[in-house]
Every structure is written in structure tokens, then in C-alpha cells.
Image (cartoon, rainbow, N blue to C red; front, top):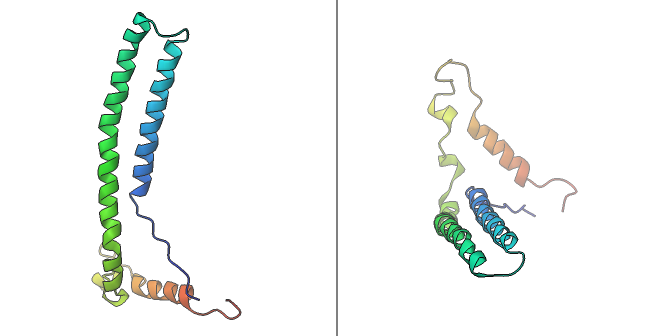
Length: 133
């Protein structure tokens, strides 16, 4: 059986970080609001709540569009992935080593062929191993 390949978009870490930052900031602001009014809401406490509410709205309105924008761009990349995988051919991929005649451009030292390393890795990953099911 050929092993499955799991693909995870690189931007997901940034999206998760921004989402966590948004929710943590909102929760901290919420707890500050709650701790400011331990005995109930009178007119002074209600007036003091205006600033945290405004801060929460500003934070939400600034972070949420960024998270949404990054999420939409990531989904566009994920949507494009099946087409890219259908047309991808290892033989046509450009390698740094082959582009530089297998010599380091600055030192002139010989380079190991990237393409051969990729072929060897693919062979190791997808060749049938004796006794494996």
C-alpha cells in the first residue's frame, strides 16, 4: 500500500497564532471588566466599562480582518493544490545543484545532486518493503 501524504499549509501557524491572540486579548479584557465591577453595575461602574468595551471592539476589528484575510488566501492556495499536484513532475523540477553545474557558485566545491536525493527519498518512501502490508 502506498503511504498517504499529509499536506499542511505553511500559513496555518500564523492564522492559529493570530486567532489565539485575538481570543486571549478578548478574554483578558473581559476579565478586567468583570473584576472592575464586583458589586454590581451602577452608573459609575457602567461609565468605567465603556473604555474596556471600546478596547475590545478595537482589538476585534483590527485582528479579525487580518485573520480572515490570511485564512482566505490560505484557502485559495489549498484550492490550487490539486491542480499543482496533477501537473507536477519531479523530472521537470529545477534544482539548485543542476542550475549551477553541480558546483557551489561561490566556492566552486562539488555539490551533491538534489534530484538524486529526491529520487532516493521517493524510492525509500514508496517502494514495497518485504513483509510490510
